[in-house]
Image (cartoon, rainbow, N blue to C red):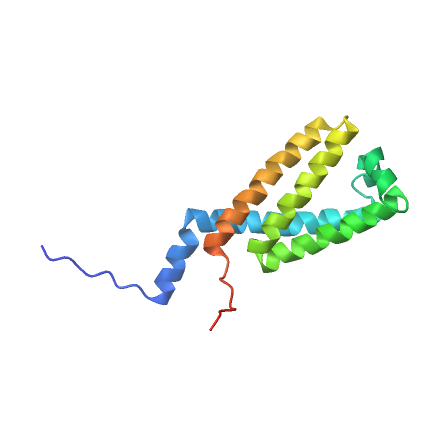
Length: 147
């Protein structure tokens, strides 16, 4: 029996790519690490979800200038920026989010009352690292090439 050559069109290749489990995982993590930091960042300005300054360790509060709420404004701006960078370039945004989560974990451990939240954020930290690894395969390559 003769084998039939497999001819792939760009349309069928696109469908195969969309069905790739690692591509789906990449898109899920990219979406979550775009939306969540932006929403949580915006909430730092409104405190609708929680009174965010209570999550600032006294040691950190003593080091940063201004009030705890003013520090949360800066935190919110960084979180929004991180979410936008993940949306545009997850290869660079994912390690930024991972580093940010590491800082949050250290801050929560310094408080001493939020070990459960620190553990949850450790899981998010690992997920951000997974997004970084997936982004190396699925994020568009840099367009800057040396000649």
